[in-house]
Length: 255
Image 1 (spheres, rainbow, N blue to C red):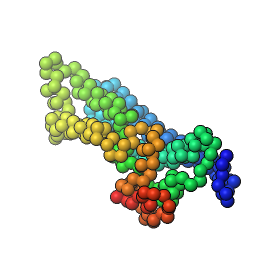
Image 2 (cartoon, rainbow, N blue to C red):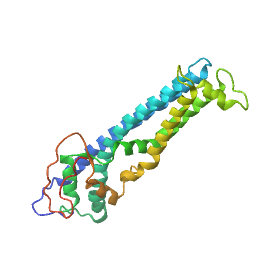
Image 3 (cartoon, one colour):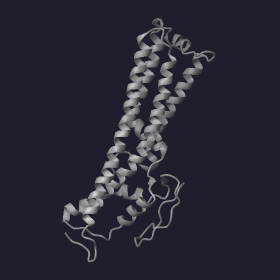
């Protein structure tokens, strides 16, 4: 293993422990993400069982389930931004440190990724926006949950308190969708607008910063680290980072 003169022999051991610590953070937040999805699945299943199990059950529970699932999605998007941060540190060590070590058994201490990781450790920032995190979780998990809740609501309107007559199904469903003083047409329009909003999140968010998967390529990973439009974690002020690397020499600034 090649080593620069004057460098600490403990550096490889430090990197191993740092990798383990970052992996623990990543695993913890990955579990928190899965926990939120589990809440949404269990809640949706319970609501469907309650709404469809009794003809007298109010159909508003299906609509409340949609907004409850949206609340879970919002919480999960926030957690996913933190997970994306920690997993980015894991990937930078895998692609820039361990891959050369395994390939050539060489550690080059003068690499361009050193000041990038140092800057991110000193002043960490989110690499994706909240809306992009929302779109990511929608595409991977919540589209099925929201589709299930929509199907539950439409089925409720169609079969309860009695099955709608053939040929008059739509008008019957609109009449049953009414909530208090709000006519059924208004309720259905509101639900339709809400689902168009969800579809828009899925369609348009991949172009924001391109985190389409949880396993990032090397080029995308490095590009995200020097993104000048990155969002900071918290509200800390960024200070210039002294570096001899070519290209951006400052930590990304807050939007």
